[in-house]
Length: 125
Image (cartoon, rainbow, N blue to C red):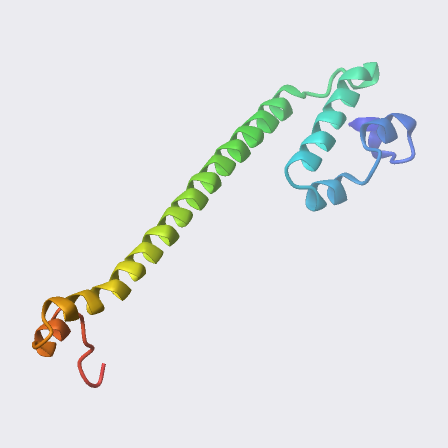
């Protein structure tokens, strides 16, 4: 184990300059990645820790970074879709706002016909 779990051991302090639990909980994204990369580099640089199996940790970190990048791409696509939806909704509202006056000009003596183009909620709904 890393310095036999002695948190005052200088080797342990080089690997974990701050409490790992706090760093992992508090950090997200780049801050957490920097902490993890730093810890793995410090383990690799310490000859006494040569037996520590870091390959799985590297693979896990790579998978985590890949998943985060994918999540960010999905967030970007979602935000773009929301923006398109908002613009489309606003355009639809504009067309609807313009429709009644235009229909009234087309059918000036037929208000019931103009009204029939628009949805009216039934009573009690």
